[in-house]
Length: 140
Image (cartoon, rainbow, N blue to C red; front, side, top):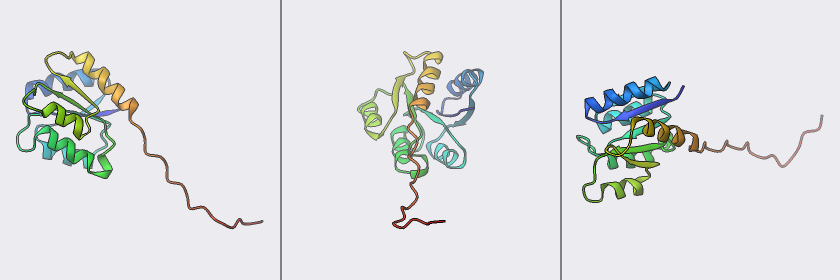
C-alpha cells in the first residue's frame, strides 16, 4: 500500500483529501508545517507528497528545496497542490523540482489521486550499486 503525505495548514483541505486517498487505498500522513513534513519523511516510508505552497514557517518552495537536497528523500515525487499564484511561487516550485503543479481551484479529488498515482509510477528507482569488479577470477 502506498503512503502519501499531505502537507497543508488548512484542516478542512487535509480532512477532505485524507478521506479521499484512504478511500482509494492509500495510507495517509498529514503535516501542517514544513518542518513537521520533513521530519515525517525522514522517519516514515513516504511514496509521494502533496504539498501546499503557502505554509506557516517554511513555505512550500523551501520545503521542496529541502526535500530535493536531502539524499534519503530526494527521489520522492512531490505534487504541488496550491492556490498560490502570488508572484513567482509556482515557477519557483518547478525550478525547485516539483513533479507536478496543480491548482486546488481547478483540480478535483479524483484528478489529484490520479496525478499522485502517476507520479509514484513515474518515480525512477535508484540504480542498484554494482559490486566492485575483480580483475582475477577464482577457479574451483
